[in-house]
Each structure stands twice: as C-alpha cells, then as structure tokens.
Length: 500
Image (cartoon, rainbow, N blue to C red; front, side, top):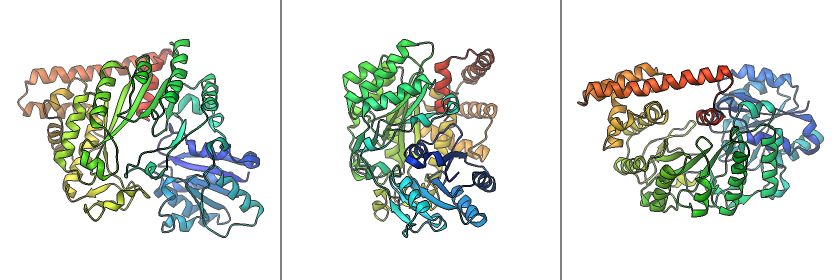
C-alpha cells in the first residue's frame, strides 16, 4: 500500500465523487491506491489510527467547507505521530486563499483547482523523484475527454445504500458572485454517449438513485432530453423498479420540449433543485445574476401544477442590497408558486467568490469560521440575522419536513413570511432551542401558538391530529412494508434522497 485517498463526508449516505475521479485517473498507480471515506464526528485519533493501518506513504485529503476544521485537526495529529507520511490536500475549500491557511502549513503539498490529473502526477514525483520544491500546485484542467470517468468505482455497497453523484458536465456560464462556479469561464460537457454508457452500467448493477451535480442541467436542451429519455426508458421497461433522478435547473429556461419530457415522469421519480436566490432585480444585478423573474416564476408554477416532480427551490438571505422587507416579499412570492420545499439559505462567503468585493460598501460581516455565514450587513443587523437563521431552522422542521402539510396553511395564512417569523420568534422564546425538539412537543407548541392567535381550538386540534396521525400511519406502513420486504421503491428512494 502506497497511497490513500480520504475525506470526511457529512453523512455516510454521501459518496465522494471527487475522490473516485482521483482514483480512476491514477494510471499505473491505481493498484497502489486505496480510498477510505470517513464521516464527520469521528474522533481525530480514530481517523488517524485507521489511516495509518493502510501503511501509506502518501495521504490525499479532500477538503470541503463542511470538513476543513475537523480535517485540520486530523492532519495536525497525523503529522505528529507519523511525520514521514506525505500529506496532500485538495478540494474547493483549500483552492482559494490557500497560502495563509493553517492547514496548508501543516500539509506537505496542496493542489488547487482540478486535481484529476495533477494528483497522480504529483504522487509520481513524490515517490520517484525529484520531489517538488513548491508546496502549492495549480491543478491542470485537461479536456474532459482525457479524464477517465469514475462510476465503475462505486461499490455494490454504495449502490445499495448511498446517493450516487454523477455529472454530465462541469462548470457554469453564469457569474453569480456568491457561488464558486462564478469562477468558471463556461460549462464543459462530457461526451454524452460515453456518459450514458456509464449510467447504463450503473443501472445494470442495481443503481436506482442518481443525483446530478451539474450546475446547469437544462442549459443544452438536446442533451437534457437525451438524459431524461434514458431514465424514461428505464421507467417504461420496469415501472415496478423505478429510478429516481435529481437535477439542478436554470429557473427561467424551460422550453416546451423539456416540459413534454418532464410530464412523463411518474410520482416519486424526479426532483428539481431550482435556485431563485432573490426576486429583487437590483440585488440580482449587484451580484451579477442574470434571471428573468417572470419566466422563472411561471416555470415553477407550471412545474408545481403540471408535473409530478418534487421541487426544491433556493432563496438566500443576506445578499448585498436586500433588506428584510425585500426578502420577505420574495419569500411570499415563492410560497405562492407552490414548491414542495423552500431552502431558506443564509449567505456564505465561500473562499474565492467575488461576493467579497461588496464587503465595505454594504458593511458585510462574515463569521471567520466555516461555513462563513454572514452575521450582519448595512440593512440587516446581527440580531435580525440571527432571527433569520432561526427562521431557516424552524422552516426545515415545520414546512420542509412535510410533517405539517395540513397545518402549514393555517400558520402562513395571507402573510407567510411575517406569520412564520412570528412563530419562529415565539418558538425560540418558548424553547431556547432550534434542534432536538421532539415531534410531540412541536405539535403541542404549534397548537398553543395557533390558539393564541384566536383560531378555533377544535379545528386546530383536528388539523394537527390529521398531520400527526398521517405521520404515524406512514411510519407504521413503512415499517410494516420494510419488514415484509415490499416497501414502495419510488417512495423509499425519494425519502432517502431528501434525507441525504
């Protein structure tokens, strides 16, 4: 054993696509390379112990915003107990503002940007000499045709138990300043036939849950239609054993040809992630986001009413130039469009993104520690931003969880943002917590809040009972079906994906 590829995933269900790309492109070093994925929360000493059990000469760590702090502790410990092991870092979180990072100082080498080809080349230099003198290496970006696809490296256990991340393209042509993809010059497609052949092989091995990480899946409609047709063919051939596919859509680009394909997907087989981020045109211009709001709204409304796709739509609070009233109007507009989930995000200063250029003009203050969330700006003070953070957490618990489908309209009524903000403030005052609130207690708290607003207690209790009973009934049926080995495949895969 010579080389180990490692990372800390947020959950076991997340399988690292990046590490598999590195392994697939190791060339003559592939036989000497192994891959081990850890999960956040594992004790650093245990990680180091398992790493050293491979007796590696080189360890490559994938560094992301969610794991950089824990990985830094692991690297520090590893270099103490085994200083002879060469540590190489790579990944988006270490690719920008690299030199001043403490984890960079602990490591032997860092690859910034694309590592598919550069990591193997660096390993050969380390093993065979001459060893590189420079610590930081800019990753080479080869044509995609020169990158070997990694999908055969998903194991049978990955296929059975984890989300499979796939990509038909890399990059993004848009320049939204809060996103790392704004640094890309354009989007680059993989050769479609070769990609679909890999998807065919995965499906033949039993893969049924595919999450596309393409930033702009519907940018090239001809390509989108071919990929969707691949899944539609699988659904037609085996409706009793359906696939489940997740795509990220550009919200204002949904031509009729794509709609015709979308409506053919049955329930529980398709999810769209749609980034709206803001409905304020001035804010969009400020952060270099191009979006036709009316088209985007019409497309979401159409998807909600004419398709079976599960819609997960993103908004970001804290963008420069947007005050609380503007965000509230955008939130209310999005609620009226009827998506199944609204991901209420808080702006983060991802390292390398151009959003930092607005720091002085808009008095933007960010947390210095990951995930670098905004703490305040010139229009939303710290206390209000904290209220928004709590709103986001309670929104996940109440609205996005699906546990209060009948009760949520009572909560939101004719002023969704204002009413839910009142509920959020009240829940925090009552519980002093935004995590680990038992479902039974949450039901009782919502009942109390609605009653305090003058709603008929009998009606509120009946509505909450219908939600709670529905959840218990679903849980009972799910456990019964699983025990019998006959749980509905589409529902299971959709639930598994949404929980990931």
